[in-house]
Length: 126
Image (tube, rainbow, N blue to C red; front, side, top):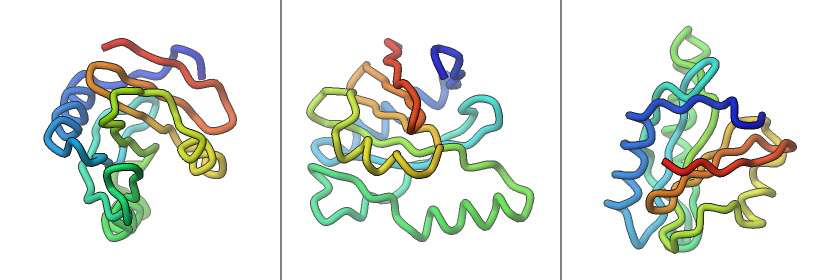
């Protein structure tokens, strides 16, 4: 993947704002686009311990995938925040990302990390 991933600046602004509003809990949501991240949504974090992990509301994910199948926007990945301020993927993050080939983005304050499972991850300063 390298440094070739394009993420819209309004997407970055949206997820940074959502992360700040959710702190000290983790925020999360979906990423949409084709050859880059063009839009993001904010979903409820339904994890049992939302201060330490995230689980995107399954209803939001199912609705987005149904819309995609009907010709809507393509779900190309997921994002979540690390309120602790470290944007590197945890072991749990890496394990969760391993299977699906989607783009994963972590936001922590001003830092943003994006990676695709099975490939390299790269940090972007925004």
